[in-house]
Amino acid sequence: MMMELQHQRLMVLAGQLQLESLISAAPALSQQAVDQEWSYMDFLEHLLHEEKLARHQRKQAMYTRMAAFPAVKTFEEYDFTFATGAPQKQLQSLRSLSFIERNENIVL
Image (cartoon, rainbow, N blue to C red; front, top):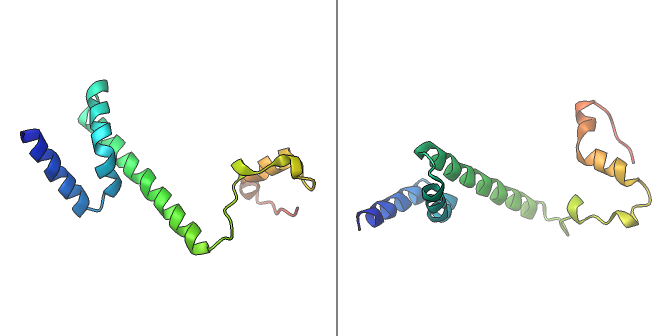
């Protein structure tokens, strides 16, 4: 009973701090922390990491919606069998963005 009250208070506080992903991740992570004997700091680190990942994903989704792309395309979905202009190795190299570090321009 006491643990349940504490859990409810923590979830209310997380909601007030707008840590929405922490609320959904906490039950599974708390069980994992018990099973793997995490320290309090390890548990907190995992919770905050989950919150950070979820915020990044939400932000990325929001920016994609705001950009109003007709379709979202990724390198993972790209079919290299139809790429006639540039070889796969060159496209993979461009994907790494290493040309930026080398201060190079690219023209395909």
